Length: 73
Ligand code: SF4
Ligand code: SF4
Image (cartoon, rainbow, N blue to C red; front, side, top):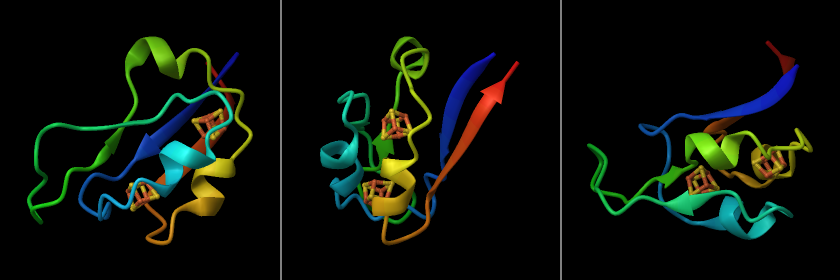
């Protein structure tokens, strides 16, 4: 069982608050613009495996762009 987050790229305004909020420093900013013209937050597959499911990133996001799933298969 693992934890995972899903970042809704279309909702993301690129504020980077989630990158600061993550205690594990797992979230990075993409180098590619989304359709709204922002650089969205992203997490790599390898970093996703280290997610503790703490939900701090989702709580911090002002645009409700992050969902956290705890204990998924
Ligand atoms: S749930 Fe916690 S550990 Fe996982 S990406 Fe968000 S802040 Fe980081
Ligand atoms: S806090 Fe939300 S809006 Fe800001 S970069 Fe992270 S996912 Fe995007």
